[in-house]
Image (cartoon, rainbow, N blue to C red; front, top):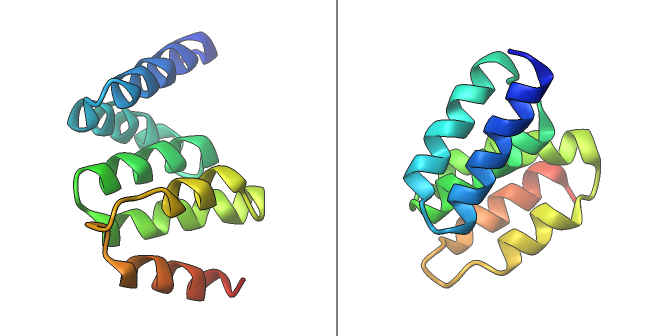
Length: 101
């Protein structure tokens, strides 16, 4: 995939997410992760989409990859902190235990 195609597709996924189309965004990010599995930005958006669809446990590893690449990333931490109560509290506790903040 050409860089311009990658950027265009990533932007499409972000816009879908921002418009509440989480399942569609997830599909776009899943496709991009096939060729870029360690890309920190893709892992953030994929994890965020998973959380919005109620798959918190699956999201952990994607946020972990983002934090591994970008350190104490405020985007990830703020996103997790802003999640409503339906997000399992254990998910955040487990996530932070993995990173040992």
